[in-house]
Image (cartoon, rainbow, N blue to C red; front, side, top):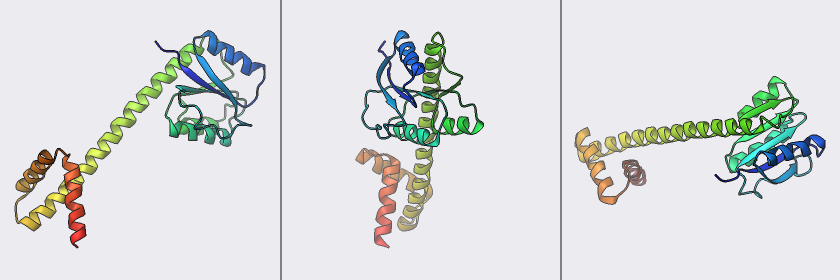
Length: 194
């Protein structure tokens, strides 16, 4: 099992931050770097090997969340946030940007591994659902394009729906392309002719 590579993002380099670094290390996590979000606003493309973000903020501020959001948009990963901020607004905004674990009132060294493991599991589940939703949307889009292409073929070739479908399917097999790609080509060609 590989060691989880952590980027630690904090809002102050105090004793609590040092304790968190130690707790992560003693639980088998590798803290690649500790970033102070107040000082280092643009670090989003510097850490390609990071597998998770662990954040420690006294108060959750919009600018901090924007920084985290930019990072996880460029490379989706689990985000664990330790804070003293129990405001509903901070929680909602954090979850919205992809925080997988929002822990109030600090951390417990004995629970940190479990917290991170649960956050990783939540992240993976969310990614699977997100990927499946994306795939379903693409399939639905392809179906709409295929229906439109069938309509074009039916009208231009004076054939029925089943024949138009078979024609698209044959073109897809002959060209080793998806039916959606063939449908796009038919629609694009028709739009060029108009």
